[in-house]
View 1: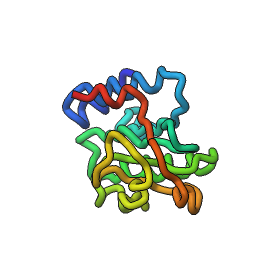
View 2 (view 1 turned 90 degrees about the vertical axis):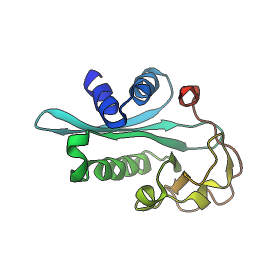
View 3 (view 1 turned 135 degrees about the vertical axis):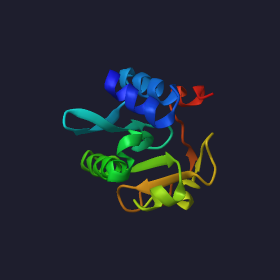
View 4 (view 1 turned 30 degrees about the vertical axis):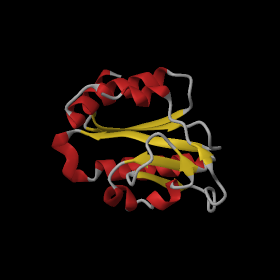
Length: 152
C-alpha cells in the first residue's frame, strides 16, 4: 500500500488522493483497483469504487501516474483495463469527475451523467455505459462514498 500512496502523492502533489485510496480500499465497499508496474516499481494506479443510488454504478477515482512516467500512456492503459474488468464483472456504468477531453477518449460523456442528481454535478461529471442503454431510463441520486466529500 505504501507504494500506491506514494504514486498518488507524487501525481497530485498532496496527500488527499493517497488517503482516499487507502480509506476506500479498507472500506467494505466493492472496489476494483489496478496498478501499473514497470521493472518491479509501481508507476501508476487507478481505482473504481461502487456508488449508491444507481444500480451497478462505479466511480473512477483517483487515477494517478508517477510524473516521471506520464508520457508513456500508462493512465490510458489503466483506464482501458479497468473498463474491461468492470464490464466482465457485470457492472453497468462508470462515473468520473475529470477532464472531458481526456475521459471522452474512452467514451465518457457529461450528457450521460445529466440523468443523475449528484453533489459533484457539473460539466466535468461524466458517465460511461458498460452495457448499452444502462443509463437510458435512469434518474435520481448518485451517491459517492463519504470519503470523497472530505476533500479540502
